[in-house]
Length: 356
Image (cartoon, one colour):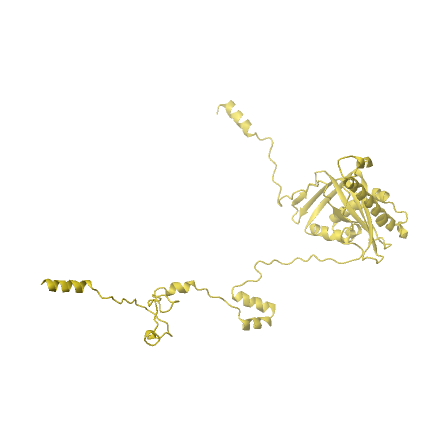
């Protein structure tokens, strides 16, 4: 009995190694099933016959399909067909696909103007000397290098030289300007041209405007007048006009078609207001008097006997503190508060007196 029990216990304890094989739902369609028999090799992991395929493929098929992105590639045949279509037909084809090519596109506003050689389309020399450097004795003061002390004086000297030899002297070569004096011209004509130029914009008469304004200035100022209106009233000058710069050049170069420009400092009192097309106030005021300091550029086509001085542009030097007025919101003005109504503090006092 003991022998039988010992043999049974030995047979139970001495298990033979079991070959456990995982089930593979799929296999590679080109892989043979008898690799080990003929080639002597076999897969280390029989559960994955195909490395790129999951075991339970059918369960997650829909989820795997959602991970894929369908790319809409360009069709070369359709591109070739569209290249021969007119623009209107291309737009129709795009609208059928749900694409609106003009959704965020606004109508283009053309701001073209005529080119002419009677006027320069810029300021010849917009530089303005900031201040007179002071007495020349400051050059000999200690504390600065000689170059730093002499720079403002050399700049002023070169500026005056260009005013004379590239400005006044060049203008006087022409027969009608032999006795031309810049100071006399500025005191007599500069303010008159300035006033008439602004008043001509109030009339909206283009022929009248072009008498006092160059093509360059007309291009800048006319859009404000065309889409709205301005009010201008000249009240006088605070200081006499001062000539800052005189320049005269050929346009085009070496053509003999000379154009002169004079920069004048104007300090005036004026009333100015800008309105939109509905008559609502945008800038300025009809009642408020403003003292204005401006550097105005006047231009003349001196090569022509019919040339006349006209307003050309304005310069804003960096050393001048120009306070720009912020445009008000277009719309009717808010009614003013009635000053006769009692304030909050007065109401409190009245309530205390009445015993409320």
